[in-house]
Image (cartoon, rainbow, N blue to C red; front, side, top):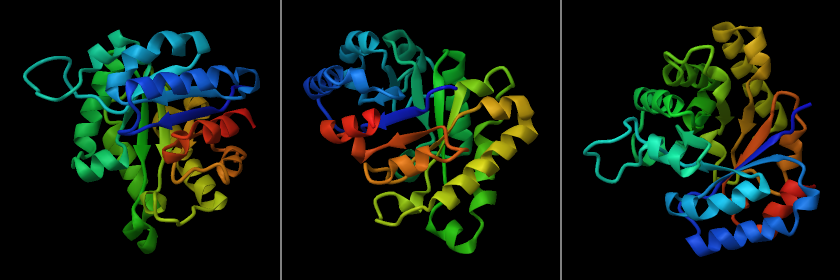
Length: 248
């Protein structure tokens, strides 16, 4: 049985020095590590963290990338450069990118295809906001996000994509997604992959849950049969808190 996956999205937090100190803290607790780990720090820390992360068998991921490898795109980050730097994963379609930077499905799809072209594994985020949940259209909404974002992704590449379900209405709001709701959405996502790519590939693809994951609720989500791991935001920033999660 494969290990479940824990992805830490540090967002715009931690300096290079703080990032290295965090890895040193994990190193002291490696004996109790139960999960496969991916840490997604700010871009500036990726190079500095690579050697120690490799030693600890922790994969590094980027929080975003552009849909071209090079060019006159001031401020953007090349997926080719990220792969060359040693990143193995990239988060795409995160709700904050969709909300603050107005990224739509077509843009995210272009980024996914370019990331795959550069042998990066993609963590694709999908999820509904409060309106869709209130109107009970959340499943249709998430499936449409998947259709847009996975356009032209072939069967050879689909297993290099991990899908993270992050209900936007439950992020930083104090509202809690029930295990039943998380399981239902993960099951519907699996059904969509099965219809699009076949039962075998559907059985192999990983589905993460991300939405106000905390030390108090992570075990509940990891226990679900359709959930293969978790995407953690704020709860991954505190070393003691994070070690409690990854070792228990």
